[in-house]
Amino acid sequence: MKENTKQKVLMVDDEPLNISVVAEILFHKYDLMVATNGEKALQIITSETKPDLILLDILMPGMNGFEVAKRIKENHNTSHIPIIFLTAKHDNESIVKGFELGAADYVSKPFQKEELLVRLKNTLQTFNLRNTLNRALEKSQSYAKTIEKQMALIDKNIIISSTDLNGKITEVSDAFCRVSGFKKEQLIGSNHRIVRHPETKTAKFVKLWETITQGETWCGELKNRGKNGSFYWLDTMIYPIFNELGEKIGYTAISQNITDKKRVEELSVTDQLTRLHNRMYLENSFHREIKRSKRYNYPFSVIMLDIDNFKEVNDTYGHDVGDRVLIAISAILSGHIRETDILGRWGGEEFLIICPHTNVSDASVLAEKLRSSIEEYPFETLGHKTCSFGISEFDLKDDDYKEVSKRADEALYSAKKNGRNRVVVFESMHE
Image (cartoon, rainbow, N blue to C red; front, side):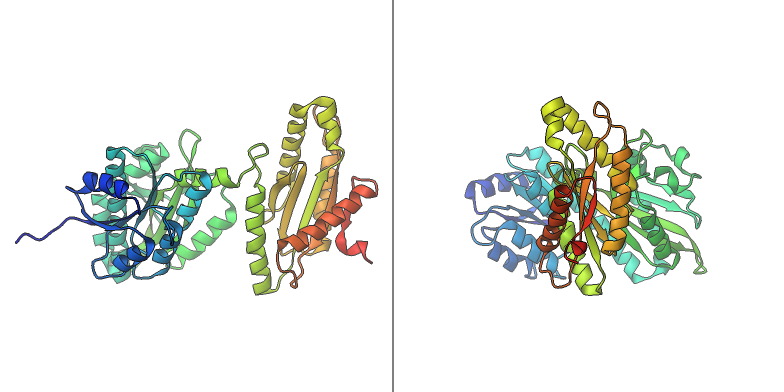
């Protein structure tokens, strides 16, 4: 009997019609398994006949698709299985959450037969190739030649670049050329900085080089610049390569294009007018800083600021002028905060800055510099405008961000009440 070589696809959906449609599309190319709820899906996934890929609906009774995906990725034995969300739920928040849980792709209902087949094929091909490379890397560095041969075979499908020890490009795949817009002859011999995006923080590259020069593998996301000035995002793994004598001779990077994923993420956490982080991003940042602060026992402070008499600007000059003021102040703040500070629009004419590893004294110095910069700035139409500032430091006894932000808000209110265009620290209010 001929052995079944079809790859196994598990579809998880509680709607018989959806199952029937997908079965008709996949029947001839894949071995289709079906689960009508999350619990049954987890039973199949943890059995001996694991699927090669999972098509997962989000909206299901009982355990929803997000919870199923979370459990799959938390299990070491199943975390490698790629997941494609196949759902009618296509708002930005759901898409971002799906990618955060480890989804490889997202297909919205209704879909075209050709689209589903291509996405399945590409996802399986990418994961198969990356798994092959990972297994080879885990065995030994002595398999470097084998890995390089495998890279040659997947030149058209995987974004690959190799450099010497100084970062000069020695080899690139066709896929790298396509995503960057450069030709091979333009890239080979150039330093890898040719694709470095100016917005990428220096600290990230310092950490990257520290890791790979020590002979270890670096994994992370990089924002690169294309030949035409556009940008693209790569999920990248960089590892050292060695010659037959065991001498390190350079580095190789294997990447996946995640530009679409990053664009969706950016839309969900960016204020559309000022292009600063929005309130949702700031609240998430609060949670992260609180965890770090309580774990490592270090301070962080919050600066809250409000544009003085902003309503008068809108009432007198119109909302267009008011919007330009918000944009200008956003630019001033962005240009004067430190690299580690987290700036965003808290709401309306209010802005908020989270200052890690910073006590109220240092935060007060920063706030005074910002206040002075805004006061001196020549605004179009208005001439000059001012802001009031309130500062508070996180207390390890605080349960969440609302307590520290409330204290900063009280300090801001005091600054407004006592003449505006000033910086007030919450501590000094009660001395």
